[in-house]
Image 1 (cartoon, helix red, strand yellow):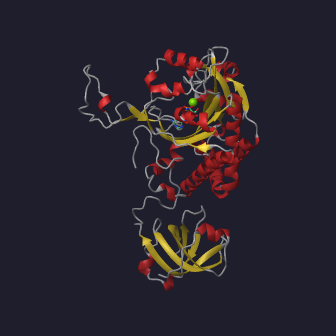
Image 2 (cartoon, protein in one colour):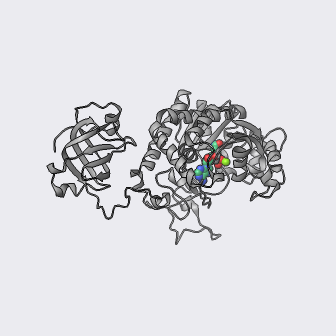
Image 3 (cartoon, helix red, strand yellow):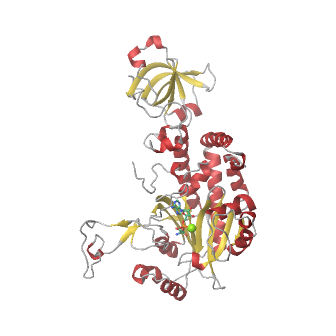
Length: 480
Ligand code: 4AD
Ligand code: MG
């Protein structure tokens, strides 16, 4: 094998130099007619076609050019004779770097179901669909940091192991080094966590918010982007036990400033994807249109993936209060005809995803921001409104997904927060430092959390959240 340096297929296709000698390395997608090898190296969704003159190569070598094998080819870049590609490589040297047994390789050159591919999560990234999703995921991570950096926010790492339950929902994974079969006990016969690694009970975090608030009250505008964990036993297409969340937190922002930032942020991400992920999005757009054709008319998307992204980038979101939303829902057709699984009867009801989706998909046909929720269905840290019934909370609701962002203005008044913590029976020893922030130089501040995988569902059109994270963690599933 020669010593020519490897070139990525994306570089070759973006600026092809006809007549140039190139070396490409990648994985075989197909090998047709003992002559045309479609090679993909992950740098782009597009394959490069390598043309072999089989008379010049050993039959034994050609037999190893199977789907899934890793190969290196050196050859001349020429204009393609065939359809489907502009350039191709006429192969001089051919090498198999890693064999793939044609009989056993799970990914055959045909369409596999997403369910099947979830069981092959170590290989599914080699399909066009998952290659596109991984690349878009990277672009979105980069766009998140770009957006906040351009606005002067600082990225802060918040802890993954914590002693507090930020959302107060109690759906946490315990972190312990105690022997589960024989833990140390207190005199009362309960597990003695004083003897545990941290000398107290600890869990994987459900949110970095409480800790990132400390930084907002010093650096002004900050954000955390990290893994979060929730042991909620909801086996839905929108819930993961391990997911990533982007949580900006801003001093001197009220709830309206918070909503403005949330809207600007997701519009920026949508535009960034449209401008920077064109080929991958075109592929997923076509995939979505094909999928829709298989569905009954009433389940089809009214807009294609690209149209949905354009729509979000270019249209103002609707903003209404929870109270207004309840009025709309109460008088809605599915409520009157008892089509909702959870009927809306009284003010104070928690909204389910069916209600959120009705508002977005049927009523307004736009993303909707709901704000000023009843305090009883929201977390302890949200700022009390003057009506004594609602808090300055806000949720951003998206088509096909429901809640994509949850946030609020925070309670910055020590006495009010302390009373709320006591009322909800939250142990003060868990939150002393959070309360103390309100004693020393407190200031109005706000923030929100964008579920990164929910966003990835929107931007790829994938209907199951298990398909937008490389290795999903869900109830009964931690393979890989
Ligand atoms: O609404 P949530 O629970 O809000 C918080 O955690 C706040 N501390 C955020 C903040 O104000 N800094 O979660 C925020 C978002 C949701 O809107 C949803 O997009 C996502 O996180 N999310 C999940 N995504 C996947 N799987 C789950 N189990 C999720 N739970 C929440
Ligand atoms: Mg929420």
